[in-house]
Length: 327
Image 1 (cartoon, rainbow, N blue to C red):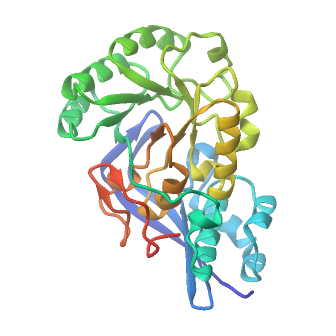
Image 2 (cartoon, rainbow, N blue to C red):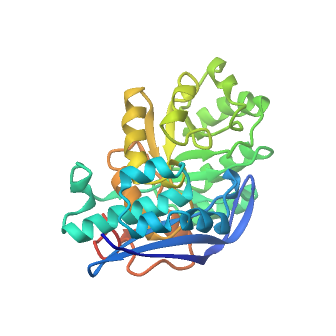
C-alpha cells in the first residue's frame, strides 16, 4: 500500500484563559496528521505537552522518522513497537484507525470490537482562579451537572467553598495537578467530604505519591500524571482508586483500549480525560469513554472555536462522532 503522509502544526486560541497549577495559557499548539490512499483520508490530532517533555517540533520530528514506513503501509500493531507512548504516537495511531474505517466502510467501533457508542455527558472544567472568580464561573455554569475544578494548593478550600456556593446542586470533582503537599491533603480532605466532592485527581507529584497507600481515601483518588500506559498500572495499585486515561498519554486508541481493560481487571475505576484540543482529538476518546465512571472531554468547549465539522455537543452531552469528523 502506498500512502500520502502530511504533518501540520496548528494553534487554536482558548476561550479567554485556561489556568492550572503549572501555568496559564491563551492558546494551544496541536499537531495534525493526515493520511491518504485510494481517495480515502484518515486524520489524527495530538497536543504535545510540556509536562511530559514534549514540543511541537519534537513531535513532528518523531513522526518524520516514520515517514518511510507510514507511506509504505505501516500498520497500527507495528506502530506500537516503533514509537513510545505519547502525543506523537497518538496522532498517528488515531489517523491509522480513521484511515482503516474510511477504506473499509466500517466504523472504528466495529473494527475495535466495541459496542455501538451512545451520547455521553462530559464534566466541565473551571480554570484555576481566585475563589470569587471561580464562584462567578460556577454561577455561569449551573446548567453543567458535573464541574471539574482546577486547584493549586494555597486557597483551595476557599475555591471549593466558593464553587459550591455558586453551584449548590452540581456534582464536583477536583484536580490538583500534582500541587498538594501531605499537609494539604490531610487538611483539605475532611472539608471536601463535607462539601460533597466526588473525586480528587492527582493530588501529589508523580513519583512522590507512595504516601497515598497509607492515607485514608474517603474520596476516591484518581491517577492522571502517574498513569500513562499499561506499564504504569502495577505501581498504582493500593494508592489510587481510579485512573485517568488520555490518548495523548497512552499514545493512541490502540493502547488506551488495552490500558482500560487492564485497569478494570485490577479494580480501578475509569476516567477518560483530555488535553484542551479540538473535536478531532476528542472523537476517538468518545469511544474509549463509553461506560466510564467519569468522562472529561470538554476540550472543544474550552476553545474560542472548534474544528468543522466538530462533535455535536448539547451543553455537555456529546454525540458520537460523525464519519465526516473521524472514525
